[in-house]
Length: 108
Length: 117
Image (cartoon, rainbow over all chains, first blue to last red; front, side, top):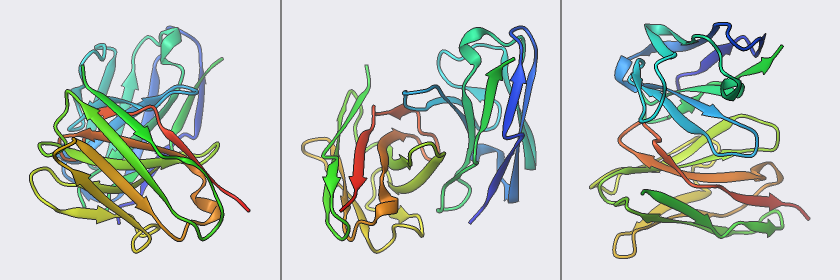
């Protein structure tokens, strides 16, 4: 099983700032098998990125995914009020799909 | 537009069983992967199982293997999660989510399951 460790656990930022979220895997992951999700309180998660850097339908360009191997990053440029949420990375490189523990992006 | 709707959740005693259903519209459960994912109160996401597109391939997380069974009804475009030997720590919101392999593009609204005596 590939364990995903997300850091930081929470991030306190102001609208307009940049958020940098990290996802580290315990073993190498093919880029095609890394995705990011956003979840707001009381809602189901929403797919943000897949294949590391491909944005899902309707996701704005301020969301940028990068990385390879075991280290992956989700960058959110110029935070908008609707971006404050919890973000999860997910790997599907093995048949045991796993999620990271999540990073909460809070309004400062 | 694609819609996934879970049903079948509720209150059950430890050791009991429940069967969750995921009804899909504008989404063919045979052509896509369908996952079950849960979220315990105040916790993160936990992947449980998926059933593969065009195959009967199924995979399970270690935490539920042997207790949960995923299946589908192609004729009615449904996916099920049979949950047996339920434990208190199975209490969570259960989501079905589908898409291409490894990509949970479409999500249901979730079905709450509470395991308590």
